[in-house]
Image: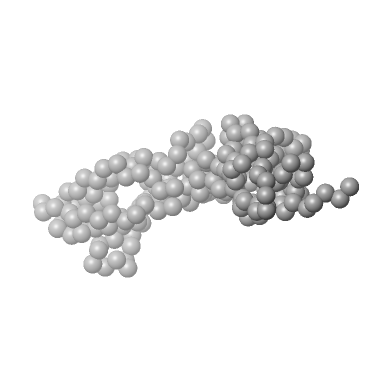
Length: 202
């Protein structure tokens, strides 16, 4: 009757970066035997628990399947440990919505062309955009000598110019993406590592 108790997985968290999402948890330690894990999911629209592609797996993470690629869906996941016939309690995540909860990485800076009074920058967005996405690039720039006085400009173009600069001066810049979608809350991404370039002489 009384089955030995198997502890439930701890630190159960959804990690999501540029809309690539996975569930992670800490391994359950036992004296002997191999602990396996099973993950289920349900969506806000469909309240029934369903199997993920992670049933009786040994690893402590589970990538979202293609069926969960809808960014607007509310998803709840649960995981339990299994050892032979013994199972732990399920551990549920908080509701996850990729469009609100993913971390957006920095854009990729492809090229920087410097003239005497401007810097021309070309970037690539950090993820493939979908219909309805509006991407805006927040560009911070500053003279290296007076790095406290930052200026900011916004653009929706992947090729843009920072203008009205002084010649023969070192300027630094950093860029982040803001994603606006049908949902109400825009997502602000991570900044690029600052890059510095000296303007030329006219």
